[in-house]
Image (cartoon, rainbow, N blue to C red; front, side, top):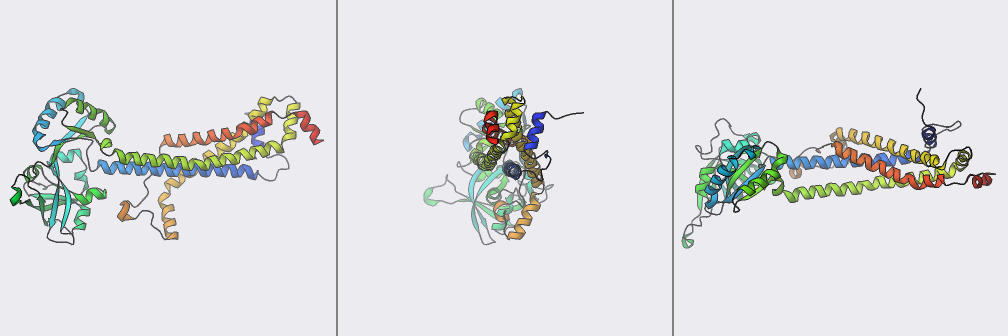
Length: 426
């Protein structure tokens, strides 16, 4: 039959897990220490997992509107770019990670509508080859109105607009629009802008407000004819493994002429991801203070236990238990409290995360507030991404702080002089 080592048995007795004869209740201070640690751990688990969820949501929405790698140039260098790309990238076996690619042309323009309150609006026009662009982006999945089977931007002289843009300008499927661009090749004394009339053949929704409100897609050949030299041309690339984007982007940049700009998805949105990561770290530091406060509570608890059990410690020393064993007893007592608080906190945090929407809805109904207004965040629930790595990190932090809180009380207990204590008791 398994028996606890006497050090653990005594430690468990001191924190109230094993009651002594005549004990009527578990130490209130031990319970408060456990509650404090579990609250801190649960708060960290919930907040960090929600921050992970927001980070993943931002990443998914950005990737739904762009490709993994983008190579760009100006209009006059586009043919050189295509030739260089075909010869030095697609022709090499070392670029086997490339899944698909598609040409594009992009420029700023004005959108004119004959209906709606906002008759004219500044937009970004992206010229695409529809079939190949579907392969490198989520545009096909994001189209909510329009016949995908018969969608041909070139033959229909069509345009695909964002859902937010359609609502802002009161545009529907089948409406006609005009795209206006400056013509820098014309005589400035008789400046006449270029205008192209288009038919709305599709409406997309990515969930990314700025993108849905400011971007339209037209046929790439029409875009080349419409735009003068003030446009950006290039190739967008889809990879088999998104994590290889920085590496492959660097290889492509080294292979192509210096005049072509190569960017991967993380580089083009670097500031946004840095901001989210910084917020996550700050929240981790701030919420760790709860565990630190609980560790101080544990420190006080053990100091009081040592003071209360001085006579017992003296008796144990008298019967031959070494000072090191006394140290182990009180370190074990602190670790027991820390482990129990950590386990309860982890379980509570995960339980809250799995029921987060219900908890948020309850709070919103009681307090009559909306945590995630649809017109601001465009999501109706808190995204959650539980990472084992973060759970382990939080657990280790909690146990480590609990261990540090035990050092001084345990050392003090181990240094008690039995003769002085017993004489004082007499």
